[in-house]
Image 1 (spheres, rainbow, N blue to C red):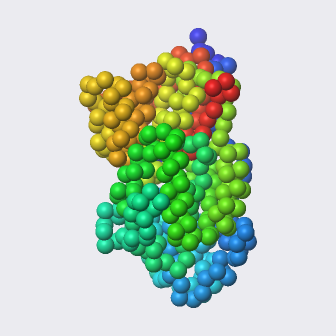
Image 2 (image 1 turned 180 degrees about the vertical axis):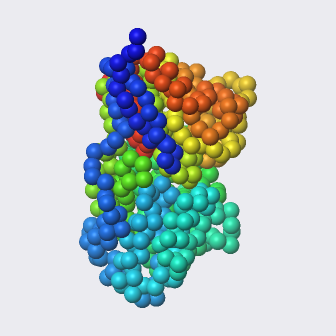
Length: 409
């Protein structure tokens, strides 16, 4: 006999959709969409935000011809080309030449062909620079932090007359959210600083708060006043664009992002199916860790988590440690001190794979996935089978952007 069910769709990867038939009464929470209207013209929204920033003069009045302007972009920002177009149009209206504008991108973007095409479509005269944290010639010394640690930043930031950070707002409870709202540090810092933050993300709340304070100190040392912040919808969509003084944008922006991406579920579920959307630069082990952390918040002990991704890269040093036969407690302690981008993912897997059944749909081969102590998912039929066996299910679109809670926790 066929079980009556409800058809559900979950996006993942650049353009993939998982279609599931969830038995009636099983679906505990459906977070495959979010509240809010998607912006039809993100470039126009940027122009409007920069024309009337919160607590700050219009950007066109804050620049003069000949200024060197750097747009420092978070690779997680959706609709990047359209948003940068809005910034450039505002600058050109103030007689800033496109050749005096540099878009500073994170290393992850260089491997994404779609990202490169999008940047070229903005303007032929626009300078697009990929930050290299190991290139000493591309770094400048800014100052020593309060903790006496040297601060090295990309030289374009240190030499700029005007910096426009274009950053994705995340809810405060999201995993690995240890930078400040401008998103400049450690994204555009040297490798030593980036490694310190990888350790902080895996080590817990206290260390993360210390690193957040360090990031805010760097923003102050740069004299940064204006920020441009984005609240994402599901997939490659934008719901809100905010510009202005950092404190004003933070107050308004976090109220919006918490309302959209901080979710509460009535109880933990036996099955959590979570997706990570976006191109190659979004299919990272850092985002895998964010998504896993969100799913763990709402999954029962001995429950099942399925992560739907387009991951297709190699394993970093922390993840390779998971294949070793080692006492779990000592493994976790060692992973929490590992200075690599996959430290958070490896730590979470080590802590949870004995309590939950974790499965991964990705572009990785079966042997690589199973070396992590994770179940290999070949296609949607495998997930459908897991769904039929569960008595409760939660669906999470863009789990790497979520912060989830359960009332009685």
